[in-house]
Image 1 (cartoon, chains in turn red, cyan):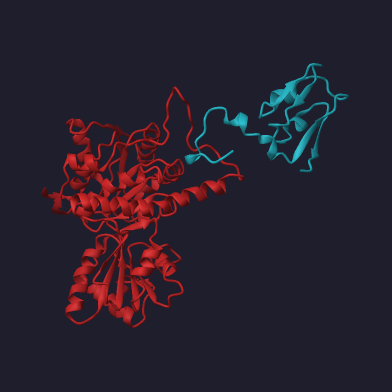
Image 2 (cartoon, chains in turn cyan, green; image 1 turned 90 degrees about the horizontal axis):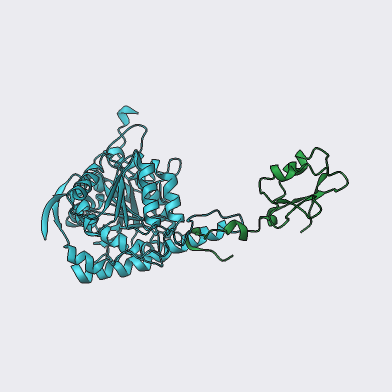
Length: 384
Length: 86
């Protein structure tokens, strides 16, 4: 049913339909509306879940780790500094192979304090073993939660998953969302069947120590599981398409890319702006196209190399920066295209909520054509 | 031991994990100098020094990590740490 709703409420509703048994979160802008809505649903008996209020995000995710290990489907949501506070637990959740699903309403990292959007928070967690999905709009954000549970809980994966959507730009925006029914989600998402669980009658410990004789092999196994998630995502995304008409089988999605000479690579809500800019550039005779990265972990290197194999140049839009290096997406796109001879330029933009408009995308394409890139875009020189 | 998903383990793992393999130096007890005071047994962090039938003490090399605390603390200097060849 098509419903005009705020992004946060749409996500909360999708989470409700997934029937999480334990929710633990701490409110932080711009994630607050999600957990506020879920807390209401729990209080109003619209969802049969335990809502654990905690003193901070470290405890929120720790509670989820315990609950997930005990065999519950668990959910949390956070952003920015809240995610940073969870850092330690994030690595543990992945290493213990607990399929927790967490929403990130993407926000910049302090200092300086900024409540506005970029993707530095979740990008900084790229090495933790969590799957990472990035939504372009609220429809995708909503659907990806259902898919994330299905993939994370698959016994060949067993990893936690982040569903990232841009703070404010999506989280606080009202747009039409085709909401699944409870019956739809129940048909698509099987009950959580834990691989192993905490049980007083048959005690077990999770995440025990590994000596140097074993640690390397454990990391190898986690890496393999993240990579295995690719096929599971494809299968789950395809089945979602068959059942509900929106196909998420592709980890990357091309837009007017078939005959494109210039390709833009981006993640998240910026893709919508890029598509409009591309339409206008196409009208002006410029052969531009977009490659949207929907899944950042596992990183779809082969899919990117295949999708961009015929273009003449690539601009990567990064709403993050690995300080002292480049944007995280660009680094990995360059790696995926290594040896192809296709020039890839990186543009760091939109940090801390700076608007990215259609004319910015066009200007970046113009810079790329001149071979200018691997730089911050849109710096206000007068304040430097 | 084969890897368990998520490094999960049932109780008693430390019993199965033969930490003696970590050892580089091995404590060797000299019964001539031993006064049976039992300080080494009390202070061993692994709890692997036990009384023998003759009321002397001896380490269990299956679990002794070779930390050397017993040799450091022995009032009679009756414990020598000897490098092990493996």
